[in-house]
Amino acid sequence: MGSSNSTPVAPATPAPAAPAPKEEACTLGPIGPDGKPKKICCTCPDTKKLRDVCIVERGEEHPYCQALVEAHKACLRVEGFQV
Image 1: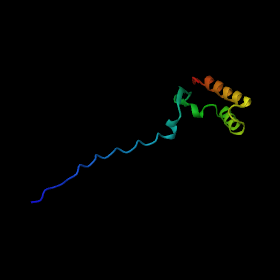
Image 2: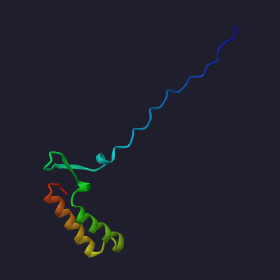
Image 3: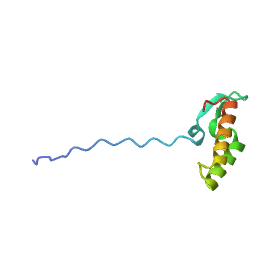
């Protein structure tokens, strides 16, 4: 009978982990009034929008934008985040 020349087969590699759901992509912080953790990405939307628009239009180093960054950080601190 013939001899079998088999080559070893590499084990299957595990599939890459699925990306985290959008809600988990945000940093969770202090507990809100509804009993759920607050998400930093959804907290202080007004100061966040002003900050982002300023940075896009004027650049991060512009003094007005730096003031808006600090205002946003202050808002986040009031909400219980440590930034």
